[in-house]
Length: 282
DNA sequence: ATCCAGGAAAACG
DNA sequence: CGTTTTCATGGA
Image (cartoon, rainbow, N blue to C red):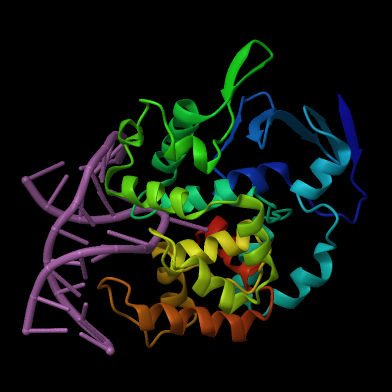
């Protein structure tokens, strides 16, 4: 068992961070422990005040994964631009954006479209059970998230069993398109935000919303401002009153919202988005 | 039954 | 070209 002692000015809430809906592979047991599969390892972790206790990963890994190396204060100060976001931020104190594994994050948000969080979670875990590697941890069985080749070259096991619906070909096509993961990750990482966004949207099943989530949650491109039905409602009601349609979200409406947010909240608008989403204040 | 959920692709005019 | 329709799944 390892421990990290957070400094008293270092804001971090494990529950807010793992429970806000940015990541789909963690469960909590009710007695304070969270269990999750990250990369090739199963991690258990809990927070008691300023103490993080965990097993299955090193101190540097946990620090990196939860972005504990980032000083939140200036970021929070920069997005705290109005009373509404201020309430959301107070409600979700300690929420941090995770550095998710990029390939898994990509597939996760391809699986997220027109769906809800419990369904997304089920899809990811089913893909892992079908194609991932088995890990036994404390007597229980977990599965790693598979490499692209494991999905495309599935011997008999097929994606169609994963209940992805119309997303099945998207996942397969994208897994086929990503040959070398390292190379793909480095290419996107090296690009500025808008170029990386356009590049991601070339992949099957990746539109504006999925691209923004992937850039925000896996590539630390904090200018991303993903607009889903919740964020759209919030922005319409509290920020852009003139945008009051209830029809399907159009491309130009998405762009108006994200560009407004980029102006209003600044270069860390992605952090603002996650606080607004997590608080989900009507 | 109908609507909804961290939308995107295909079809349409 | 921008706009509308379709898509598969399960919970409410």
